[in-house]
Length: 627
Image 1 (tube, rainbow, N blue to C red):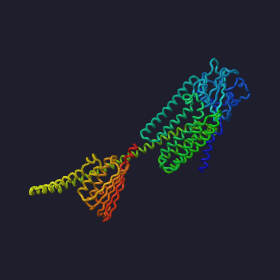
Image 2 (cartoon, one colour):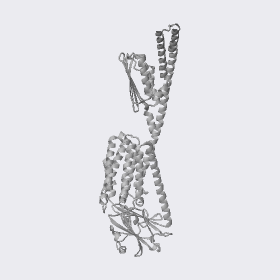
Image 3 (spheres, one colour):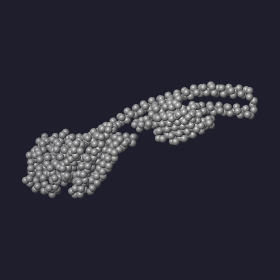
Image 4 (cartoon, one colour):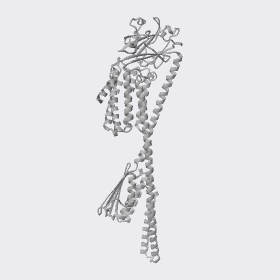
């Protein structure tokens, strides 16, 4: 069923190249009037006849009255002649200007006649000729009525030639009042649209520079491409950018329309992170986009021949390949939606809408659909507008999700920091109690004993050395306790230096061979995480000195990117309790709060080992990037 649907869609998309039609529409002061009027006549001649036409051609007998066949007539490289008497328009004010609001007619010539006499004729002009061939420098084709003649006595004759594509002929007959109103309206509308697109592009460029997110770059490129298509479709690029190079006219619109698929697909590829979420599909997309881009380069860079056969061949190939690629990517986005990949629904809806509008536009171009509220006749605009709107909402959705996630992560960070500081405060409270006991039991009694000894001892050289040694040990104990309790030293020196100094002192005081291996740089570790590391190492060393009765111990600390690893083992007596004491249980709770791992391996007589691992930037890094 899916294969059949894809085949039908491909056939419908490519069918727009199977027929070439003309549609005549008449407007007087902006209001539509019937084109199927028997007084309007038309005929066909060989392509290029307008260049050598002479007044005798207007008397040929093969002119036919306008009917439905004129508005739905298939044209195969022929020149269409249309003859319209201005007397059929019953206006209170005289017509001053006649315009064909289609800047993409290849060749065009205009005559004004009175009876069988030509009173004025234009040069041959068109988008296959330089812009300065036009009588009035307008993006479309405009002609002022000749002076000195009553409007109702004149007829206007047009010869029009458009090759290899459908010919739309919107003819506007305007009074002076309507000319000013229409020009002001068109200028204001175009200015607003270009200003709005420019504002969106500037916002995306700012976000790209601020965040480095490539999705904003692809969105900006998409806005630039649809702006280029809009200017090319309105004939403004030909008028202002390359007025002397008409060869570009047949290329720019299909080029922009085809090229817009690239940034759209790359935008959603980046937004959905397909490289991580769907790597196989991501490789498929890269291959088909590369093939698509290669075909565009070949097709649009091929030098146009006199009959444009080579270029139209490549453009026809691209017109089949492009919808095929669009359908493949639509299938991938639907698959991503089923897998519940975030924002995939936006991509599927965007591409489905683009496919639908291109389908409607193709059917209208082949006269299989009428012009329904200008949607079918301007389906390409509707599809690009829908894509731009959905892409904008996708970015807004992602921003709001990031903002919500950022709030949640910041709240988690605050809660973690509060618990960390509470643990530090509890540790400091325990240390203060220990210092209090030390001052009372150890320092106080030691000083009292030294006083008694000095009162009754002989002041010999040996006694003085013994007294000096006791005072030195007492001073070392005081310094050790001061270092253990001070966070100022930790902030000044860093956790690595403090741990190295502490282990050096322990080696001197206790008969334990403690080896320290530190891998990584501690400068990147935030201070409150340094405090956590210091707490952990203090508790591990305290347990080693008090309970292990070990001869050797090995402490390894590794800081790699955002991870912290702490591992310690000894050859002591071991233990039967793998939960540890109160101090280790506090450390376990702290590590679990940081979403880390805490493992103890021990047995009686087999030593003791502990491994601790936690991420010090997981939440803060995300919060920083999401903000």
